[in-house]
Each structure stands twice: as structure tokens, then as C-alpha cells.
Image (cartoon, rainbow, N blue to C red; front, side, top):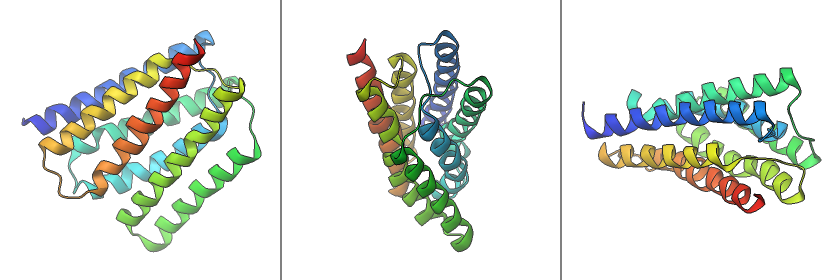
Amino acid sequence: MDLSQILGGLSGLMLIAAYVLYFKQALKGESKPNPASWAIWMVAGLINAFTYFTVVEGNVWQSFCVSMEAVGVVLVFGYALVKGKFSRVSAVEILCFLMAVGVGIFWQVTSDDRIANLLLQSIYVISFVPTVVGLAAGRGKENPASWSVCVLAYFLSILSLVAGQSGDWIAFVHPVVNGVIGNGLVAFLSFRKK
């Protein structure tokens, strides 16, 4: 096992830990999932899991984190949906969700994994808007712990790509945009709210 594989494995394991922690936070009422963000992350995460695997040229270890993200998001979304743990939704959030569905349709029509994956990253940027706006407006509630663990997991994912000398720059976009910037912003705002 080389360094890239070890870092990729650790990244995925940290993301599993982050989602377990988020579940505990949601159960205690410390975090309240934004339905639009989580619905977008569910749709985008599932598409991303398939397209990212192609972007990293079938490297299971480098795509492990993205796969665990998809599983975690589906589980959190399902839990919040069944238990009614979501925060309120706005028109911006509905628009963001529809844009994620549009990328999914583009991917299915064109079968272009690289472009679909790149388009998904813009959706990920937009998908954090509902959660960030909800936190800023006082409608949202998040504990920074799980979000901070996600940032560390994606940082390890980036290191895995560097160690594995991934030749495709698109492979770096997801862990930077979604992992470090998006999760980092929510963690930062959550720390400020405490």
C-alpha cells in the first residue's frame, strides 16, 4: 500500500466519522439539516461518486472519500426526512436543487463524466448557500465539530491526490471546493454562532 492509498483510506474513514458525529449532533438537536442543501448534496453526491471515479481514472482509494460522502449524505437526508429534522426552505434553495437535477440530466444525456463532474462543483458551491444563509439568518443550527472533521478528511483527500500524482486537475476541484471551502465556511460560521 502506497502513501496515496493510505491517505485516501484515512480520508474516507474520517468522513465516515464526520457523518456519525453529524448524526449524533442531529439527534441531540445541535445540528438541523437544511433540506435544500442536503437534497442537493444527495443528488450531486450520487452523481459525483460515479463521475469522480472516472476523473481519478478508477482509483478506488482516491475516490473512497467521495463514495463515503454519497453514502453519508443519503443516510442523513433519509433520517432528517423521516424524523422531520429539517430547517425551513426558501426559493433560493429550491432553485439550487433544480440546478443540481439539471446537471444530472446533462450527465445522463451527454455521458461526459469530466464535464458533468466539473459542473457539479459549481452546484456544490451554490448548495452551501442555503446552509450559510440559514446560519447567518438564525434559521439554521449547526455544530462545527462534524464540519471541521469533514475539512480534515478532504485535506487528506487532497494529499492523497498529490501523493498519487493525479494527472487530472479536475480531481482536485471537488475536495477543495466542497471539502475545504464549503465545509470550512459552515464550520467557521458555526464556531462564530457558539
